[in-house]
Length: 253
Ligand SMILES: Cc1cc2nc3c(=O)[nH]c(=O)nc-3n(C[C@H](O)[C@H](O)[C@H](O)COP(=O)(O)O)c2cc1C
Image 1: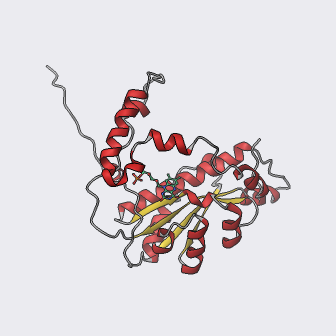
Image 2: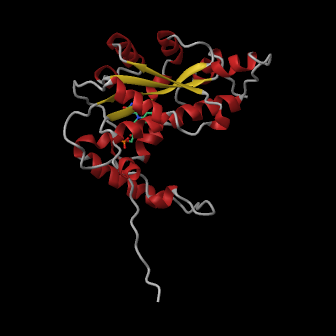
């Protein structure tokens, strides 16, 4: 008779992923160039749409530049206080040059914008995981899309390049976390074969309560998930983004 076995699968990678937390406080301890290089080069193995590699990575150590980036991101101090700030750029400039090398003109479209943005995001996630596998801490910085043109000017981007998000990286200050920010329940985000559209409201309410418990009484304003999100999204966020990215050489149609 076959006995059902309960197998728990775990690898170094799933362990790293399961212990992810965003880190915003850093020790005054350098991330050595070789370690950073190892992390960034491992991330360059990420899959990329049609091998087009429509992204670039920029590492910024200069404190003055990071101070300016921190202001542009809405005064996010960890950009100044980390050891190295890394930006993930959607880069269709290089595609344009590659096309010109063959007498062609790059036909920019929503698809090229999406491909470049997705490529940048994939490599960024790989950097986060690789960095965490070394015990480094990191937090992604979407605040880089507050003022994309100023970021581009500060870092010398050519047309057709914008920073999708950045990442503050360094050695985490303080104790290793014992609690991890809970995620929405598995049943709400993982579907099998067919999308399960069963009323999500009870499970959202449960999640709100779980998140409130995670944050504790001092952070109730952050606590419930759906409430703050509803407030935040009752108007378009970054309403000028399309116009700005178009001025930077990206198309949305
Ligand atoms: C694309 C992206 C942009 C983000 N931007 C910021 C940011 O600008 N500032 C910040 O403090 N955290 C930022 N975060 C981190 C999220 O707030 C964080 O991942 C989320 O709250 C879950 O918490 P955890 O990563 O600690 O589990 C960003 C995350 C992502 C994926």
